[in-house]
Amino acid sequence: MTEAITVSIFGSTGSIGLQTIDVIKASGGRLSVYGLSAHSNTDVLSAQIADLSPEVVVVGSDQMAAVIKERFPKLRVEVGGEGLFSVAMEADVALNAVVGFAGLQVTLGAIEGGKRIALANKESLVAGGPLVRERMAESTSLIVPVDSEHAAIHQCLRSGYYQEVRRLILTSSGGPFRSYSENDLESVSVADALNHPTWKMGPKITVDSSTLMNKALEVIEAYELFEVDPRQIDVVVHPESIVHSLVEFVDGSQIAQLSRPDMRLPIAYALNYPERLEPVYGGLSYTDGLTLHFEEPRRSIFRGLDFAYMALELGNGAPTWLNAANEVAVDAFLKEQIRWVDIYRVIEGSFESFEKWTFSDFESVLSLDEVARRRASELVASI
Image (cartoon, rainbow, N blue to C red; front, side):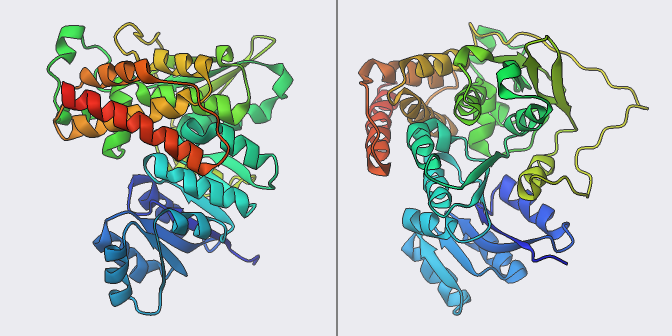
């Protein structure tokens, strides 16, 4: 048997992290855990350490590090962004499921180490796209997307050449409020927004799905991943979440990737790439009948998509600004400081202060992120 592929799971206590552990355990020894990271969930991380015996863990604070070291005296423990960066350089694969902007450190570290990145942190490319592109050009690193839509496009693109592509079509479930009126949206609660009809995800990404900001960030991520013109990226609402995305070629043919909504499939695809290996995740049965529906997103109400195309047109740090403002707005909504409809107002209002920015290193990305967060926080406080 060949030596196992080592995997560091960044964000191991979250939904994607937990499902990655399932995939590794079911791999029959092809995959093994090298490192784990968690921002604050000490108890779940401790249980994972006891179960998986990693070489190293990364935690979010010195206080958490002290607790882990007391429980596991022989274990190597790293802290914060520097820890994420350095540990990402070490294993064969960095599974990046860190929530939000902090995941950029994982991506940059894996690029520096020439490692494969199983990318479930879209903010790395949304916030740090120009910097990631620059570093990738000088690295042997490979990014294989884990987001179901981008994993689907990645698979569909194996059916043709880049010069044959007419457009990429991202599918969207439409979220829990797909049929709501503008008046209905004025009074939705946090619990309403977290009740996704098809996917089980963390709170931030679930709220993003309800506003279509998740799809907006995915448009920007597709632009960065697949190097197409933004006008070649379309979005269609598909409530069943069976067709995960499509590629249309210049002759009019379309290639789609279909499966049940099971994130273990794109996780396994990214970890095993370029091979496809059992067990089966997301398999479909056609004997029970299969009905698929598609419709245009209601962009006049769900304005996230417009923000994405605006940010790509502005460039010069606008996607970074968009990501930061959205994170602040979603956090405020989850804390019930603003209403759901105010998320759009915070994002739109923050752009009145946007100025073009040039990226040269991580610190310059961080600086712009901080300015955008400060402006968005001011708007939250004023609502």
